[in-house]
Length: 420
Image (cartoon, rainbow, N blue to C red; front, side):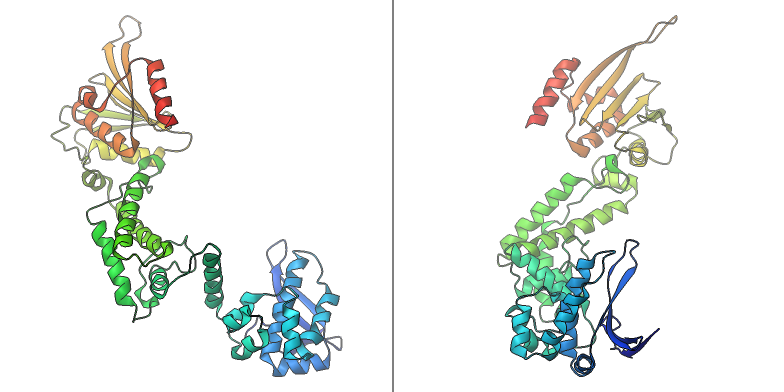
């Protein structure tokens, strides 16, 4: 049976309880094997309780020093109560200079103190007692996160100026560089916002008219990596030229914002409009000779496109690819049975085969085909091939060669390309 003797406003700061007549400090820290929070307790005296009641700074310092012992206990181990008890007098009852000296020798949780308002400069100089004069019961976890983000940058030599920091706050990437950027003007100091917007305007002007198309080979929401890299390079060059004082972190977050927004616009665009924007639109008149096209994948799934469809053949084919493509499904075919021709796209090898029927099978004999191979340069190359085939069949693909009928010759060409 235990009773709470003393607690603070923040539920995470250790409480003092009385258990079977004995005073104990109790705190939640870490988690067990089932991810449930663990609770640790150890005995204290009335003298320790008096300091904990009256001195928030010492209370927080004790918490900071005990937390590493809780971490050491892991998911099942017991708290080293002797080590915890050994911290009580040196932290709660000793002179400030002695407390500072102790914290230079032991492990302690810096982020916990920073979250509760500790002066970061004094902490880093080893003056922990003085640093805690501004301590508060309420916690500001974001302050500690920003401190650790700055430490990570400093470790790789990136020191932010005021404008750099403001740009990272604007994109929401100050704490985590992997966070998808977005526009957050309210997060920026109003005095710096006009300068931030000048940088953003530079980026917008640099990539005006550029787009990031979709890459259905990797799913319906995937985007073209080459388009992304092209826009990223363009934006970063323009921003560095116009604002040479910015550090790399600030420049990269601006290009990330531009590319992310362009990719989102592409994902929300219907496949027909995406084809048109990419310059591969196949109008119904251009494909008038095609009455029926058959799309198949490497799993034997088939989809038909009919001439009276409300959608273009290319758009329906790429939607089929986006829905069906996978690591074990990277071969897709478009066939015009009436004309006896088709193309087979090999996404795993960045190559294509065009197949033309030379002789129909008669009297039980197999038909005779001409198969020619060509290398393909990314999703843009595939889009060109599909659009050309839909417009004019295999004959329209001649300009997209060279076409190699010899498999050995094609494999040599593919190896040469892949070795570059």
